[in-house]
Length: 341
View 1 (cartoon, rainbow, N blue to C red):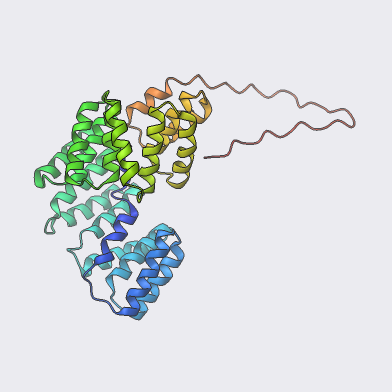
View 2: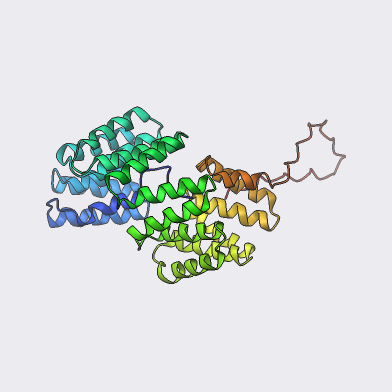
């Protein structure tokens, strides 16, 4: 239901340097704007090339190193990405998002030792200890140690009571455990700290529904639809959940097809797609969606609960002898593989 399989959304990292105080010339700055535009379109080769040009225009331009590191990472050139992230840290060790971006890359490869070394370095920086605790909680969650994840996020809040991400992730952990009233309280706490956050608003509404407050959930979803149109992912998710709560599951499925296509790492999208498909009797579609949700987050107990409601899969009969067609007969049609969604 939440973005725990990475430290932060990629474009959130990219947005950090949009208002950076690092000095830059006009040409280099314009090239970086082009790189950022390419990154937002997920054209990472162009983003890399524009960042390279910005560095040729102005050597030592940290924003360009930072952008190029992301481009290299998304292009699979992780060694080069690592070099650029570390160059930014070397030149500006107080720019804390770089530590998270580098650790996120290590975490995606399950290189926990390297990630931990980054957290150790981060913890030595001013205001870095709370972020180190937060990221350690993410790693613990990814590794299935929910007790440690909870302890790390509580430690984050002990260091900074206004750390909204930690409150939100504790709420997500409560949702994973089906502790819905506690999840609602923690999501509300996160939203109070960042009232503009569409993800927090969506999860408050979802927790309201699970806590038996469906009318209030619908009010919350309506507010997202009216006020958060700039956040496509959670606007679409709010629309889909609103339709599910009104019994319009077929319509919700169409919306969720878009969500899972455009945001394939959205646990929210895959889970709700499975829920809606199950409600209209599309068992195989539900199974596919719920298995994807399970892959993204094996700790979300409600996924398991819905999977148990599916009919057992039909076993494949052992192959028999191949039929020999008569002269002039038409071969049997090929059974097409169901396309992935």
